[in-house]
Length: 262
Image (cartoon, rainbow, N blue to C red; front, side, top):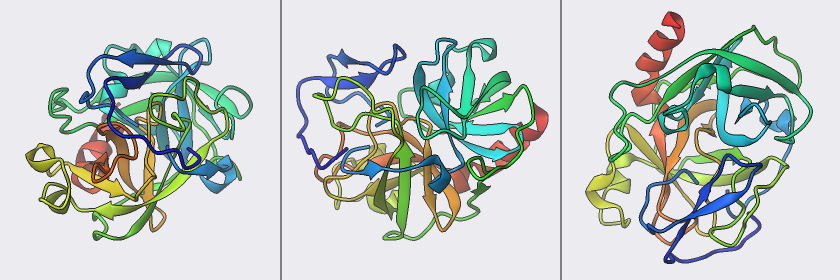
């Protein structure tokens, strides 16, 4: 994350579930969850952040704790996964040790999720046991409205610190500040995405700063509320290609209803 900027190249580094390593995809325009240009932080500063892991304690996505037994993440993080094979580490600055590891009882993702367009990229994990708040574990409130374009927001995660060349994920939680970009602005001629940005999305942009591989499902927070879920982007920290997030305000009703049902 420390200031390294790269252009679009012939391959896209994709976060792997194997011990925080990164594999290579041949498609430079693959939509992939993606923190570049940030800095080390602590879980106490972002106590809602969690790591989704395999049974081997291998981090594969981020998430946000919204109540005593519910984690919000991206739908694409949950596709093809069984609840019994997913674990959540809470309350640790390091993804691979410390804190509290809890099994998952049930999971679901939005039935409208489209893997081609990345619309409705939101999912829910119900923990197998209740988790009480501590200094290092806190619930975060869901945003009711999308912040205005230009609002500062912070994205955190254990994702790749640069695009393509960084072949291992950082063990220490990373944080970066970006600025909210409304989906209409993000889809305008001001940026390069055009009409592939939809109303269930919100963007976050700052030159030389971005989320990156391994951050998928993690939190975008503004005004102490969860406003976005790391979803996708082309490369990382590329000029006029913001990070794209699932818009929590737009998906809030589904999140609350599903959390009650599971």
